[in-house]
Length: 336
Image (cartoon, rainbow, N blue to C red):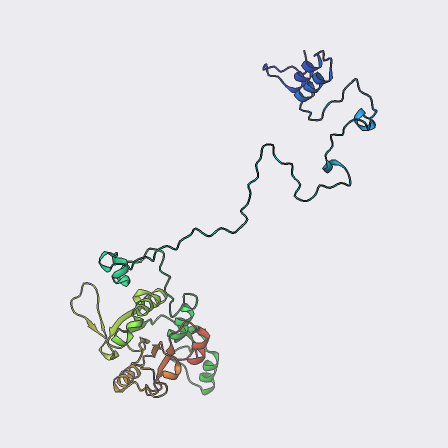
C-alpha cells in the first residue's frame, strides 16, 4: 500500500510530489512551472546553464538594463519619476487670477411669530432630557453623612461595661449600691425629632431639606425619626401623616434629640444678627425636657446669632463638615 495515498480519495502533498516527479520535463520553463506548483517562489535554475556570469555582465558591448537606482553608489535625483506616456502638462497662467468668491447675504432676523416654543418660551419649564441634568450635590455628602449624624445625634446610656471605679467608691464608703454601676456608651437608639424650616427665606434650600429627611431616616430608621415642618417659628411645627385629616403639633419628648434645619432668618449681616425671643423660648422648652437641641445652619459661623443660650448647638450645614469637627465641637461623647 502506498504510504502517501489517502484512504478518502483526497490528494495530499506526497501524492502531488509523486505526480510532478513523474512528469518528463525537458526545458527550463517546464521546471519553473513544476516548482510553482510545489509552492516555491524562487526561480529554478536553468539546467543547461553553468555557474559562469551571464553575457550581460561580462560583455560590456551589450546594453545594460539596470536602472540608476539599482547601481551601487548612484542615486536618482530628488523627485525623479519617469513621465507617463501620453501625459500632458497643464500650463500655469502668467498672472494671478482674481477670486470668483462672493460673500453670502446676512441671514434675516428670526421672526418671533414663527419661532419654535423652545426659543421664545420659558425654557426652564421644559422637562430636561433624562440623564442630562447633573446630580445635585448634597450639603452632607454620602461619604460623610453617616459619621456626621452619628457624632451629632448620639446620646449616652448605661453600657455593658461595669464602672469599677464607682463600684470601689461604694465599697470604700460602706454603701451597698442599688444597681451595678456601668460605664456610659453612645447610642442612636433614641432617634430624633427633625424640624424643617419651609419658610420663604429657606426657598433655595427646600430640596436640601427633603434630602436631609431622607438621609436621617436612612441612618436612624424611619421608626426612630419624627419629621415636622414649620414656617419661621419652630414651636409651631406640625407633622402631617397619610390617612389623618388633622396635623399633629410638635411636642418635645424627654431626652430625645431635636434636630432643626433653618437659616434663622439671617440676612447677611455678620456679627450683629439675633435670633429673637421666639427662638429663645423654643430653646428653653428643649432644655426643660432635657432634649439636646442641634440647629443646622447653611450660613458660616460669622453670621450665627449669639442669643440662643448655652444649650443650643449650632452646626454648619456644609459639605466640609466632618464627624471629627462635630466631636470636637460637642465634646463627644457627653451626656445630653
